[in-house]
Length: 248
Image (tube, rainbow, N blue to C red; front, side):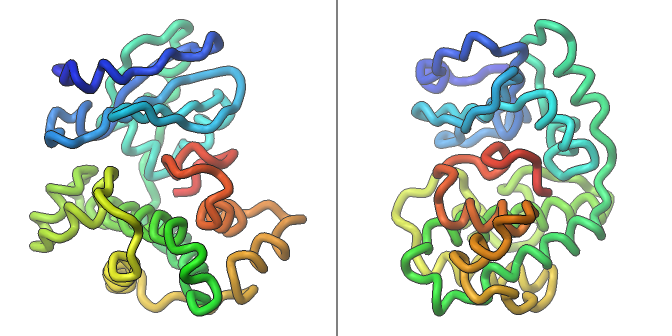
């Protein structure tokens, strides 16, 4: 797959319960840039958070977690781009093959519902700027992918989407590796582009991120999972594997 040796040098030791491994993203598509990460998915028996080692990002999924990817954007991403490296029992291969088509209308509607987390910024900034920006990037990237699928031209390359939309700033705005600290300018740019796709965001039901977590605590939901990630309590890595199921 021609992954650069300098990237492979960072590859971490896998846990003993690993049952399979695949790569996805730009390295799997063979359109990686000089600063592109290697995105890896490891199938494991015990749930654990994702890890970063240099340019290598590893997300760990149990069979149950991976099964929630059926019909999701992430599942479509894997089915289109993933390259299986090894698969001890054949489950990973079958799981990727079983990923269904995405209901893009439903996905965009769910993204709009989740966007309520960006309507209480006066209470949540600057304390939660890094997490909010991370989630804004996640929703914008997801909605752009969904748009491409709906248009009949699936694409999971941010660089290609920037060309299609004649928006060169997208490449740096949505890059997985950011050179500096989170800024309100980047957040505003993400949110303005997101509004063009899904429309105005619904008002916050609870008034702040912290209130959302408190009030949704007894009823696990997508909005609770997203709020957790925005608060930064689940780590600073991929949004796909930090909760018990795949959101989009």
